[in-house]
Amino acid sequence: ENKEIDREFGFEKLLHEIGDEWHIEKPYMNIFQHNFKCYLTADEGTVRVETAAGRPSPKNGTLTGNVVIHILPENSSSVKESFIYLDDLVFVSEKSQFSTTGPVKFVSEGAQMLGRGLELVYNSELGRLEFLRIIHLETLQLKASLKASLFSPAKAEVDKPAAVNVSEEPKLSQKTSKQVIEQPEGEYYKCLFSKNVVIDCPEQLIFADEAFINNISWSKAPSEKPGETDTVSADNAEARDVTVAERSEPNESPEEFVDIVITCDNGILVTPM
Image 1: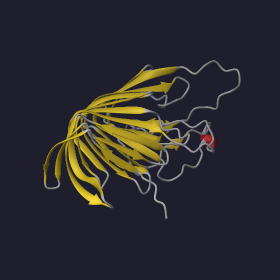
Image 2 (image 1 turned 45 degrees about the vertical axis):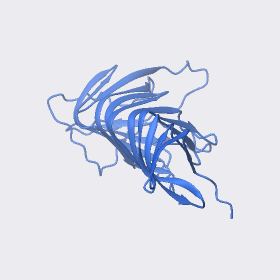
Image 3 (image 1 turned 180 degrees about the horizontal axis):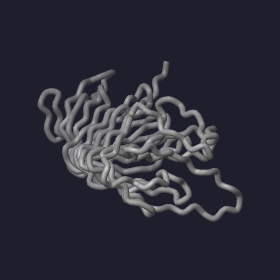
Image 4 (image 1 turned 90 degrees about the vertical axis):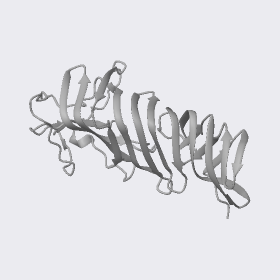
């Protein structure tokens, strides 16, 4: 039975070797999944290796200097090309766990983020992200459709802290409820911002103790219908309706986008919905 290779590891030069610990130059790790490819490079690394089927494989280690994670879509998936820039990265292969206490910069077509401290766990068997945390968020800038109602029209209450019930499903406005399509389990995520959250968008400035971005799609199958949008809820003491974008009509003008900037004191937590 042929088993597809889902991970490649290599380096340009072995600098030092003490037992199963290698100090290497220009290490790289290529990760292949059904909907994306990930290329990880660095200047140097110290890794602990084990030999399987006559080939060395990294068990865990630390990569240092100009660490770059380059993510590319695979098999016509809608995963967006993105880059993550780090000073160093600690990894545990068995758990697909990655972390750093240093600066983190994320860049993609629709988002840019600056922060410090990263904890990430990816489930390669299920093909989904299990846990992602940015310890300290400096700023997150998102590009959002001007037509999409990402926030309810109700004004944010500056004086009252936000009250978020994580167990409660967001309500949908009656006008757009028919457009919601059942989502496959494990393909959608929620992102939690907490402590002194400030959301700066063109029409309003929102202050909250907690805020969510719901229905974040890691990838969508080609057969799924268009017309869905990620929704953001910054619930205050009063309940809010979350709306989705209306379907586009023929001959409509090109879609316009605006920048939304989010900051908070307690970082970001991303988990499956």
